[in-house]
Image (cartoon, rainbow over all chains, first blue to last red; front, side, top):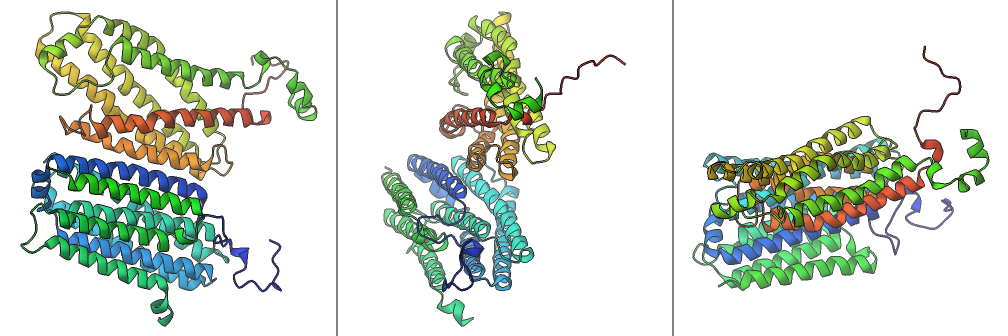
Length: 202
Length: 92
Length: 259
């Protein structure tokens, strides 16, 4: 880096700040993954809607069995977690590693609530005999929320690595923190759509 | 603490949470829901699209990203929204 | 021809005829792949009409007519002779994975996963279908069972590849030698996600999640086929870019004798 301390730059580029014009936030290859993921989930969402149109009564009856309260709580949990990741990224970019660690730590704790609530939601259902084989709605429901849950668990692992990177390195690896962040926001974004499609539409 | 409260990200989060509650309220409907209702579906989908847009723009920082990424993500959202509305409202 | 001469004088590399190319083994493995996949396609589609998958709810008369078609025996013969080529094709991946800066666990898990997938996904169904043609006079119920067995193992085996491709994807992402591009690692992982949906063929008998369904089969094929081609293109480039001093063939030692 040619930037010296004498430069008047408020945010020196030494910590890999990528908000310069022309560059995507985080690693470009992560965006490749995210766009592909959005495309695949998009196809699943549209398929769900098509089959919903064919079996409107069945889907509506099955939706009664979903727990609106848990769905709402999970939405708020992920939104809050996303907020703290975004705040943490800003703090890390401003060079405040300790504050960033605290914020991402809160985000991780919020995110960890999601799988627990998911189990609270799934286990009584499975116990009552409502399995993926029940009908087409529940096949979609378990598969898509299950695939999303895998994303959440992977996201928690990534957030763990972000925390480790924030704590151990003297200058945080901004590229990596941003990459982990945008992955986590994508997980949030997919849940917003799942929540609307499975719990709310009529 | 005050700095967090003044942060635009916090406003975005507050907006996201409020519209989440609104979409839930719409969905509950007048008579407890669980009737097919195109207006509810349309409202819920519009709010979901708005939320996704906000998450992409502010949290994923697409608003500061190059134009091609802005166009691709927004295009994906619009295409998805149109298809979902089309199939979601067109059932018999 | 010794390593030091090659390093000192790159011109000797240029003048070598193709059959003296030191990567000839890898290129042969590589070019066996299009041959194998085309043969595989011919056997499964126009020869036996096993693919695209028939419906799980087919009429019993249709099942019997299909199971007794004599072409299935020819298909079985060709496939048993050619299945070994899948191992040769997988060797391309494995030689490149060995160059990555990751634990050999990835390589061995990939290898084991590929073997399981090839046996369950190609040989089992072919044998199931071939049995009906081999001896006429099996009960219709038995033929029906073999039909279910054949399709469940063909489509259901896509799940076996989750581990296999997962190992490849992770190895690419964790590798620090940049043997294969990082985006390919992410591409592997989203291809792999669609394979989770195949688990549903054990539950659903019709609709999008049955073994001939939109989401369990067709969408996976749309994602899988271009993906497989792109992976092999990247593998080809990795072979081409591999420096000759990284080839790990044992060195010829003049004067070696049996102890």
